[in-house]
Length: 187
Image (cartoon, rainbow, N blue to C red; front, side, top):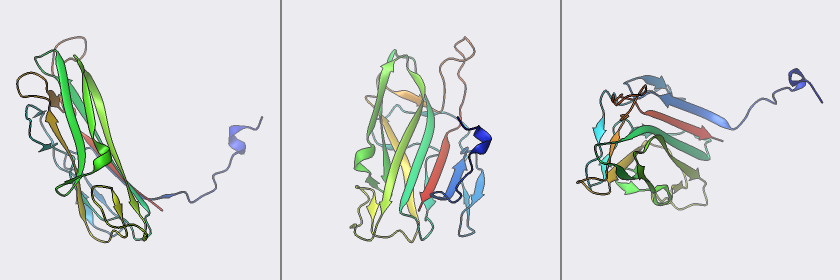
């Protein structure tokens, strides 16, 4: 068996650009030299709504490098149950005002707390027809606004706190947890 030190990286790879944000107003520079600043999320957000609501920290206006064939949008957020016992939340990634069809996600459970990861993979290929709902484009040459939206199952009992725990360190103390947003362009 070869030693680990015997393996050499082949160089290159498929990643053209990757931007990662803690959603605390931090900034990164994209491959065009533009500064992109994340939303500054400083407090929990109530999921006590039956209307689709933008999840704080999830929005980015993005243009990939010209040679990109895929863009991966990944949003990570803490969910915590509120005063009820059973919680249900629905989530979906949007491009502008259009929901991306295959990103629909339901999360539910008794006393559930977790980091929820929502992902969309966008395909860029000249043989495609442009479709926000299908996450495919013939080309992507200007900013598209990507965001995660969420809602509760009902407003009476079955909903989550977003960006907040219910428990921490063996007790019932809520702890704020800033969301994270990662966008990756692949060749």
